[in-house]
Amino acid sequence: MEQLLKAAIIIVINVMIFLLMRKVYQKFHLAILNSVITTTMIIILFMLIFRIPYETYMLGGNWINSLLGPAVISFAFPLYLHRKLLLKYLLPIILGVTVATFVGMISGVLIMNLFGIEKEFVLSMIPKALTIPVAVQVANTLGGMGLITAVFTMFAGYSGIIFGPIILRVFRIHSEIGIGVGLGSASQAVGVAKALEHSELSGSVGSVSMALTAVVGSLIAPFIPIIFGL
Image 1 (cartoon, rainbow, N blue to C red):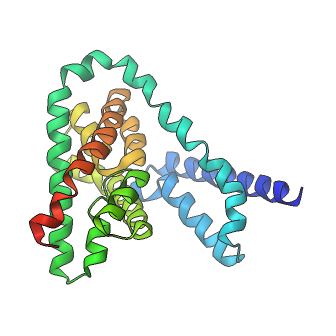
Image 2 (cartoon, rainbow, N blue to C red; image 1 turned 45 degrees about the vertical axis):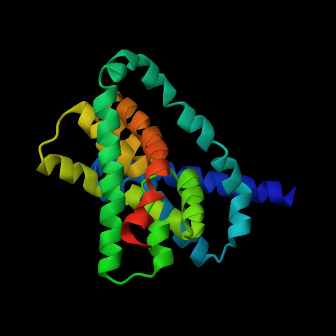
């Protein structure tokens, strides 16, 4: 009974913080105030201040985490609505995702090598653009560290929704297809959510791009260490 009560309290606190931060984001509409980012930061601070163990937090966190599957599946609805248009532009989307995934992996390795980062961290960074479950498995296969990969993946997602819109504006990318491919392939599920703010079509393209990035990235990743002799 005590554990159930703790789980309920944690769930209520998470939901309240998220709803509050969403109101803040809707009012100011600054990328840095994205409700996913601010909620995560506040919860981390909350746990540190009150010294809440991770195991205790996950009593409620597991219930919230179980909703991730249905949330991802819900992206299927806009996919169905725009299925004809998506099929029409499927080849450009696949090419865009492939190039984005390859360039992202190559550039990441080059930057980390430039600063002399240890091999294990470099290998852990390679699949950062993939969704966390896939990225962790790919990193483990490459000889990286799954937990570090999860951190890199979260950082890639959050930085993508902060700087992505700025980059799109700088290069004057207004195409709904382009916005969807860019955000979906770079920032996983949070990128898809960001793309949905532009339009339903961008969100649909983002959802397809996210899935394709996981597939294409899993195929490309094993060759990156070979290219760099890691």
